[in-house]
Image (cartoon, rainbow, N blue to C red; front, top):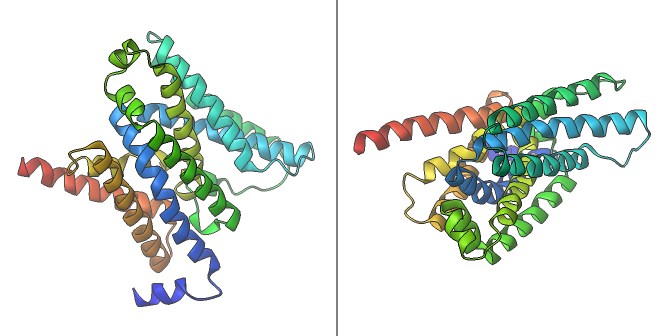
Amino acid sequence: MIELLDAIFDPDNLFLRYAFIMGGLASICFGIIGTFVTIKRIGYLAGAISHCVFGGIGLALFLQVNMGLTWFDPIFGAVLAAIIAAVIVGLVSLHAKEREDTIIGTLWAVGMASGILLIDMTPGYFNLASYLFGDILLISGRDLLYVACLDVLVLGIFILFFNRFFSVCFDDEFTSLRGINTTFFYLLLLILTALTIVLLVRIVGIVLVIALLTIPPAIASFYAKRLWQMMTYSIFICLFFTWAGLGLSYSLSLSSGPTIIVLSGTAYLILLIIHRLLR
């Protein structure tokens, strides 16, 4: 523990401080958005969106190298692909009930495949593992700024429209009868989920993104009696797993993303067993 603290405050380890700051800032979005994803039971939609992000990353790398668009950063491609995927997935889930699973599954696979093909057509070497499994130690100051802005956006929107999101998640039919545009708020929730997923990709990667988005709220649901309590607990649980996983991975020289997920998943299974036994 003392060695880890010394490493964090070492002037030469700026990347490690950035990683811990990123974990703290990102936990706010993860806790809030993850709570609604868990309550609404749209984890599979979030999974489809996360895999489409890889297509946007591949497109950005392709345009950078082959078209000379050096300003088109992979983060922009990821955001663009995530928002488009969120709108498509949202509309499909609302209006194509018979073929919902097939269409979303197809979108899931095509998003990943298109990213791989675009990268295949791009000369040069790219570290795909950092996108697939995350690498929080590569966080930059600009990434921290993006996360802080998203925190402000998410907090502002949910403070203003908390009751509407609450209603959409628990009884969208009754909410619609009251004259509230449930489609708009449902799509807005998916778009905010998409933006949060783009941040998660930097920490745990595309493959593992759903776990960190849903495990902290699932644990929080064991102890919270109100929705705002579940959000608050989720934020601190996510913060704990991120920081503990970072410290463990640094001490044992392991990959940070998988370490965070294994730690959080193991804790969830243990607490789930204890919760069931106590009941």
